[in-house]
Length: 348
Image 1 (cartoon, one colour):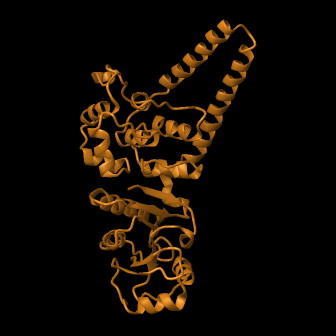
Image 2 (tube, rainbow, N blue to C red):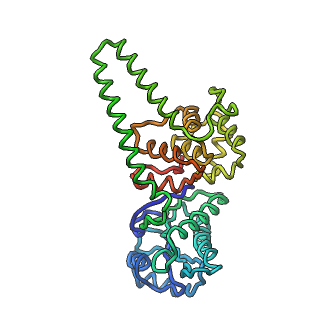
Image 3 (cartoon, rainbow, N blue to C red):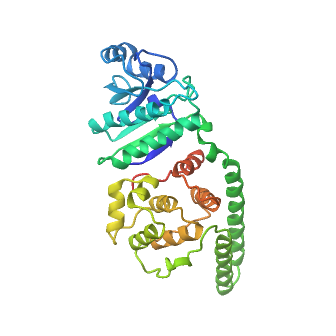
């Protein structure tokens, strides 16, 4: 049950429900609200809303989707931002949790939110995003069913931490891809030599790449504590050891990894189950593993970081530059989203 970021027209998103950032009178407005009314059919949606109005700030109600692509439209009234208002954060939190509760009551499997109150209501985008993430993750962490939540964003200012890294990530990707191209050219050259000499040189190139990765690794080394002394351990066994070493609870791990609780239970309890690479990487971020630890966890599941993969390079860069141990899967997913790469935490 992941939280995924998307840049889209919310009226075009194919989900079971879309959320309307409504006013308390549930009257047709401008912006996203107006677009949703137009997609659903203004007269029909307004007639349905009139039967439910008015609502309190933070409250949510549900109507049919009518002519829109969604089965349902959930309407919630976000707070108008006032600096120093002690209640607005809870009201914004309630917008998401109450909307999700309505979706759960209908047993919906997907829902799309705008970043509520961050437009004309003036809530600072980064603060609005923080509240949205907390509320959505809290709900999904306790929810027994399956639900995918999409957060439709337009303002990059909501992701200040990740946005600041975009330029550096672009430079890193270019640098590593040049190295990959160089290695390929060298391999092509040595293939014209004797097969024995070519094989020997390719082994040297691979060793150089491994040495570079190890030199760039930050944080504690894998050999500390003996976690990776037995590489024959299954993925689930190694994961269990890492969780205990990091002194985290299972709930903390799967919530921080943006994973479904039942999927996590399947991974941790079934020695024969091997999750997808993206799931392994999501767990590595949740556990705040350094690069060497991440490589070993991947290896235990039969994967590796590839410098031919843009997504892998973004993840590698992110891990290498968490010197203060600040790991946030939503920030990393924003970086992946910016480069049109698959985000971490999607269903395994």
